[in-house]
Image (tube, rainbow, N blue to C red; front, side, top):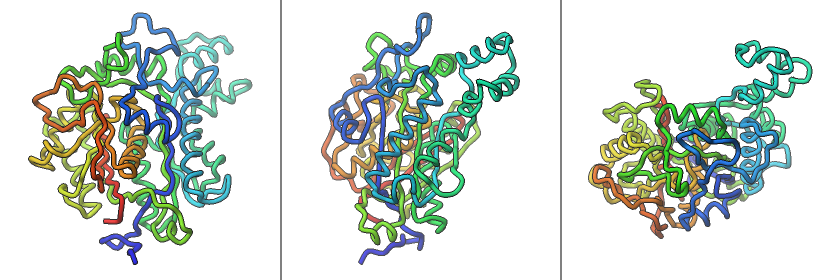
Length: 426
């Protein structure tokens, strides 16, 4: 009989439900087929005018209708779709009565310019009205809906009402590590015995004018607009930035004991979680790579594993010149010469960078890799970078024996998180 506790005496945490939405489509089946086929979901933006902008493409989720458009509303819809798929697969609880807490990673919420202008016009103010005054104005009369939507907790409140999660929902934002952080919080709650189950969701629908311009001003975005599907080029020598994208990922986590007691199908194990922040810079990684190295080592230690036990790394792999270089430095420091042989691919080459959702979206893909024993490729890899000698699974998916995956999320501000996902308890 398999023990219900890991080598440290903690409850083993398993996954019994998964859901995902990206620019490639809604649901695990559609996304997995397109990822393995090397398809790109990145396209020219049609949501708003892009004349005069340096970047005019993104991995938008245009098949989910939000009219009039609001990033907060799209975040809500994407999160709901992913959570519905995960909860349905888990068959845990009845509709609207999920027996555990909600941990939600969501983009920082603020009133967008079209809504600001609507409030300003209706109140007789000019568009330069200060932010606090806008919040006060949107809280009264016909703007109550604006006021509720543009609070950081609004998406979590709606999900908690819809799925009937227990306790106060947790909303968090740790930059590009947010999705992995949400999963880590769910794992820790179950390990501490505070819950037998948790719903972990990450969502981002932030492709709007303001966000695009902000990232562009940081010189972080690719400008390969003529062929959007080839713009995301992780680990390639001719990479020039990341591609903004939207999506959501959701996991239902349970203790191994609770899941087996009810006869649930176990999709994988969350064996380890690691995190480390460095506070080096608001956007840049520390040049010595120590925060990434420490994060990866923390995940291995938390799982009670060594690097030789990892069969595949689902890389952060954004396609920015510096981030990819720092990821190689971190992985090669921990894995040594094996860093040249172990498959290290980037889903972002196909779906773009889903920002707050990336850690959860990529955790779902990692679990699908374990299920199907197939590694999705890094597409657009035509000009190798000799300074980054990874086996990036170039351009074509690969069948492989995979028992343990490390999924990395290294965010702005040095907010780093790594997950280790396995087929069986370690």
